[in-house]
Image (cartoon, rainbow, N blue to C red):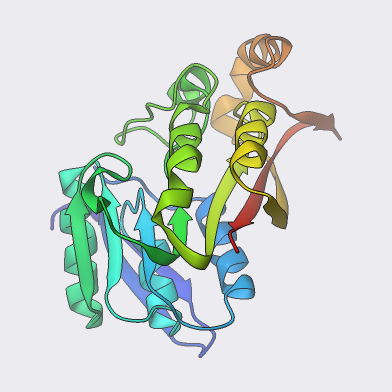
Length: 241
């Protein structure tokens, strides 16, 4: 693959997992690594796992390499480039994979999983447009960044086995209150796994007027400390009995 970017993940065994990611596929961010860390700290035994909105497959492939996936890793994404990427990476790593192209849960009708891990785009559209994260990959999460994750939350329960767990990130550059209200309406058991705070990327520093406008509308949240704008990633796990 031309114009590939190499991305390394440190495994518990101290082995390094290296992925090849073309520039047309979403590149991992701090949210990606936080999601991996939260799931690794929460899963006590291997199970069937769906990596939804898989992108390069970094989340699911890492968890599979760590021995947390029973059977093939299931992965899906709307992007054909992403599916080709995760297939190539799984082959290079010698991992069993069932990868399907399609929107949200469409490729997985009637399928049930022990674990669902979501890394679908989740920041407000205008913020995504001025961020360094979506130069090539699209972000269609709506005006307040909650559109896709809300749809996934509303559908996730019907794809979980009894005792199943659903992991999802909530980024404060989206409508946090809307997302969590929907999550609480769908799941009785909802817990915060991990919280990370980040400085705003320097490329976005000239867009402070936009940030304050979006905050005033309730679409995003952020803090201002030490002359910096800080946003957060929270990883939640929803469980069913």
